[in-house]
Amino acid sequence: MKRFLDLKLSELGVGTYLGELDEATSQGYRQVMEKALDYGINVIDTAIVYRYMKSERDVGEVLSKVGREKFIVSTKGGYVPYDIDSKADPKDYFYENFINTGIINLQEMTPQGHYLSAGFIDWCLNKSLENMKTDHVDIYFLHNPEEQLNFFDRQTFSRKIRECFEYLEGEVRRGRIKYYGLATWGGFRVSPASRQYLNLSELVKIAQEVAGENHHFRFIQLPYNLGMTEAYTLKNQEVGGERLSTLEACERLGLYVYTSASIYQGRVIGRVPSHVKEKLRVEKDVHASLQFVLSTPGVGTALVGMSKVSHLEENAGIMKVPRLSLSEFLSLFE
Figure 1 (cartoon, rainbow, N blue to C red):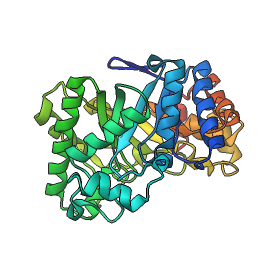
Figure 2: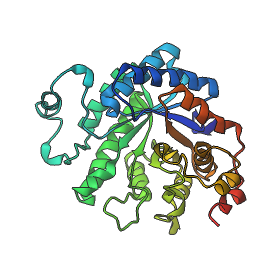
Figure 3: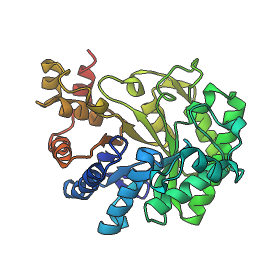
Figure 4: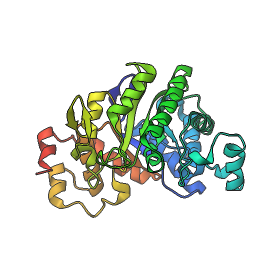
């Protein structure tokens, strides 16, 4: 377990992104979440749009069964969701919930259905709490906010972020969330010249202006694995005049890092050279990727999508392997 502020988080976390909409997949996810506790895994990550709300509802079933206090739960809002269980026509659902209510202004929505406003995030959080049968989430992520930068200027983006941070700080005071953050795909893995680039120092500054030094913007999520190493290797952030990687910047700024795609959605299997596995002190490709991620300085929790108990059992094997020392880890880049 890793201690961060008042939370104790496991090294591995259960991701709930992929999978069919059938009951067998839901049952698999529920079994994995329950069984994860046997391995000391207490982090669950989901999003309102995952499997059209089914993933959140699966989380809710497990929380109700084993106890809310057993898990650290994060969810996300940012993409316009659809409730598959409503049986409504998706277009009717969209207009009924978001357009006719004035929650969404079509001029402010991206072509991919991404939206950022306090009113929209409030709708999403309310629905997520209902789906998960809980009165709070531990971490609420704004989902891929860099999507906005493809269509709106940086000043507009900063205004939207500030509005959402103000709303989320209010929800902390209400007790409906403990902390908040950004769950990203590309924003922290690109150069500052990129349109989608996210500047951590600027984001922390907005949180400080909203809520002072005791703000609750304390988490980020980004992809990191053997094939996507930018979080560690790309010096794209600046803190106190020093060029740092995203992971280094997070340590300086007091942010905890969740890595997504920690086994590259299975694409590492069959592709890790034997000499790399030897250096990582593991025999399986999946363990090689997890050992690499978990041995990286600055990584908090590695999320892995798991809807089968057999995958959980295999992935959890990495928890018996000691992490690399810094010198051993650095030798991987020689």
